[in-house]
Amino acid sequence: MSSTQKRAILQVRIREDDKQHAERLYDAMGTSLAEAVRLFVAQSILMRKLPFQPVAVRSKDGTAAYGSLKAYGDPNRRSEERNAWIEYLATESDDSILGPEEVDIHE
Image (cartoon, rainbow, N blue to C red; front, side, top):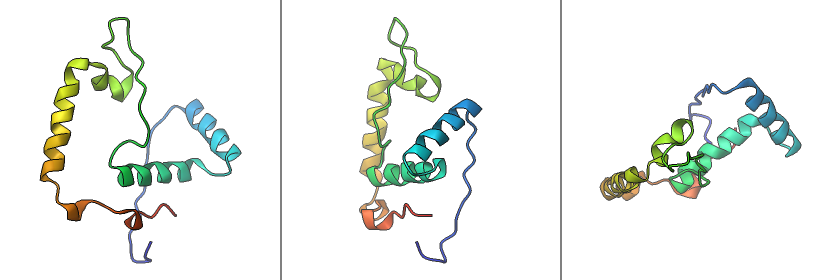
């Protein structure tokens, strides 16, 4: 990253016990929660999607999910999401796509 590039602060509210658990996990892996978030963002940009397959907790009828994944729990909305992605990708110029050399995962 060039020294002239601005840095931003990202604040995220999560449950305290989740934060502590994640900090212990990443500490055992030799990294930090902050670095894991930076890696998540860099991989998301690089892959242009979530860097993992979300697993939604569903109800017996198969439509309920947890939290922000709730919209994905409704099978009737999958085609709507797919069409939105197709429309977005069709209007994106190749210039707006970041290549691996343009993503800096370091602090």
